[in-house]
Image (cartoon, rainbow over all chains, first blue to last red; front, side, top):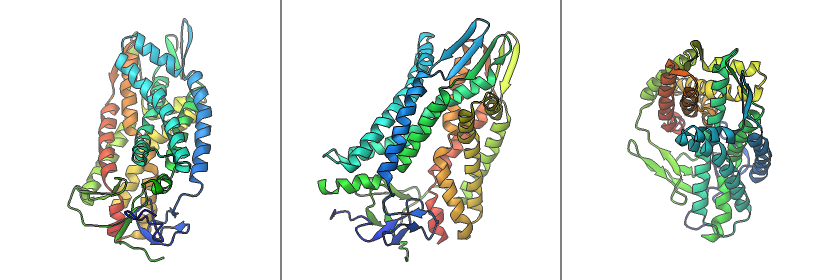
Length: 206
Length: 196
């Protein structure tokens, strides 16, 4: 029991994470005000988070290996993966753009996978890592994940625009679907991870 | 289960706090983990109503106008957001098409529409509860600001091999993204607190 800051659960109460209402009791149910599902701790939060993370990690491989964009001109078809698209930007002098796409399309998804795996693991097995640092990491992961959709929007726009019969045709490649799935799955994982569990297991360390 | 309106539990660490009144623009933070507990927005619900209505109009305009106009060797091409999505559907890229349809078009439009409905029904908790739930569940999935950056990247990418001009939709999407940001900063939970 954390004497300084007692939790709602320790006092036999539950806070609705949607609307903020505090309700008597710690059983599962529905919030009397906004009717959201109410639980003191999200049931099976860590298990579900692992399942989503493993699915995302598997899809991360085809997302990066398969082409996400296919450009057909008179001279043949060029298939671009995320990485080759970044290298093209770098080679043609748009270095800032290359760094931007590298960050949102490769670095952020990878960082999210590793961070969420670390947070989920350490929620169950805390080994003295600073809970405040982990909380900061959790908030960062929640905020930046959406920016990985950037490349999907670029591919969609290019496919919609470049449809010239002889001079060029751009199509979305087979890597686009797994890439989009990685973004969605990691966002779902971040929403599934109940941060209150991280703090519960850190309590005795304070 | 009688609720306790004078208390608030931190969403992140579950610490229980007693609510204190805030001045306009202030926010209350958890003593244990520092997460924001609640906030008193600078803008009134009436002002949010005006912003939401503006956002709805700019979003509709953004979805109707072409996003990028380009030409290769004098042959023009342009596309709207829906046009791009339909191309993806035609090519059989259903996952990507559905993702772009949801995050770029439907969710932001729904967010703004439901927000309008929520602001227009004060004192009707039975109506507001499902609206509130939907808006807050949908919000993370609308990605207009990411889409605006995507348009900018596409412009640079295409400018290597074609003449490109930003269409009117870019400005409308940019403005919508800003208004959606203002809306996201408005603490919706306050509407629920005041409804009681």
